[in-house]
Image (cartoon, rainbow, N blue to C red; front, side, top):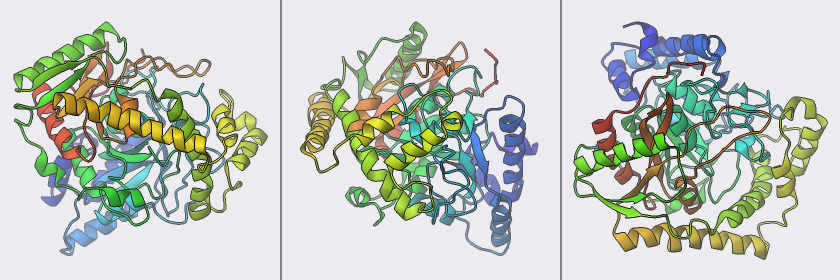
Length: 498
């Protein structure tokens, strides 16, 4: 097998190859770096990797020497992992959220999840590009564009958007530039790019994975999550990332992390009650056809399908959600900077706005920072307006929303298309999110949401969403695995020009 082909193997299979001595970490890292050079820097120029870890090869060699000396390998021993550039690494790489304002500046220490990755034997291969500041700067932003990294391209059809802020992570996984990747989501930023790039992505329950060291948008909704080419690989990465962390109080609420890999089994859908959310939004007929094909698979696998028009109360938190995000952004950014990057050229959102204005030509050539201005104008997280909006979010998304739906129909999960088809990247008009799916309901509730490839429409991928109740990651992973194994809808990108 050629070295470059190793990059396209499932991470779980690669790990077996490493443990069996058929390939070593150094060989695998070299292959990934060569593939990044061929596809990300040259060729289709995906621009999904914003920075390569200068210590990746040395780390791989250390792991190889340790294994040769008899050290017990970790759960991700030797596997290259890319992480989104809004997650702090206490090494020689920058942590910048894609912004030139933080380019060249290192974090004081690793985020907790990065510590877990290193302890597992993973090789941090580099940082991925993203929508600058995780897409909270302007309503006219372009998914996957940052002033530091440029425009990430969708590896399936290069003119199409990679959709959502974890676009670099999704594109890199799809193109085989890494075995595994970590993204972050506030509302859609893991599942939407995973769907558009034809991979598997999990937004876990908020609190399942520590948010320590993630450049924040909103503490009530932010979370990191695993992205990979298969459900098994997502479960493998979630196994390492899940932990209770004293640095993130929300993780203290979490149930004990489970054996997510052991939970995967064929037959998991037999007798499962699945809510089919048909009325979330109008969609392309090609997407509807793929959805009906997916439902036919679920029926053949023994699932009991229950049609539901929509998640109750799903339209009632649209304004309160954004209101909360803006308040929490203003509150959270200075806290992150003080702990992780005190050498930044600003200390808070007001300073960042001023820095952007003074560097307008470089950082705002296509769109502005309207959301930053709106956040700066908020009155603080102690204000009654904020507290009432936060309470409304929780009531409408949880008690009167997802919880009510699951209780009424005794559901094990709900499914829906993850979204519409990826639009053409347009720096003049910005993004064009036409189909909502179930993303916002599960983001605001903080509940788990998984997307799995459902197929393609004229070479453009779209995913099937699986939503579950709080802390039910293992359950939805098992059901989605059963569907994935039966349907086999993931395709390898062909880097088409149109």
